Length: 172
View 1 (spheres, rainbow, N blue to C red):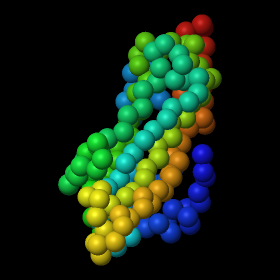
View 2: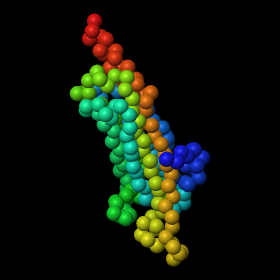
View 3: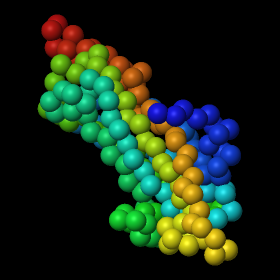
View 4: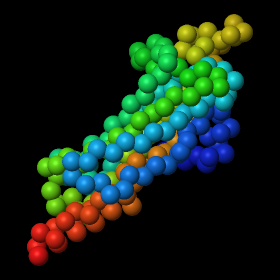
């Protein structure tokens, strides 16, 4: 995996803000959402492909913590075999990140941590159509990897700590 600095991300003209979010005090049955704005300041319309990977012990318990991502773009476009959101030059799309710790996740989750990483790659719309604006070869994909530590280890440790406090109250 390539790690990029905020300066690298801004250089490609498509940035996410905030680039890191945390979710703290997650209790069983809680559903917590946060939003991230992906802004296109590149000067050309782009399609954005999102991908995410979860890791850590909180994703291995039964039932595991659930992380979901959703966006509501104004426009979409077919690009390859995917329908992707279009972010026009100077525009943004909002991504909603939701964390849910199922009620059935018991005390075995206390003290555990996990991380959900969301990455995105922006491609100029003209490249999806297979033609460059000047009739030359198709433009290359511009990838901007952004790592968002969703329900990051510290936040999930807080959730585990809360479960520990809940358990110790029940022992009294």
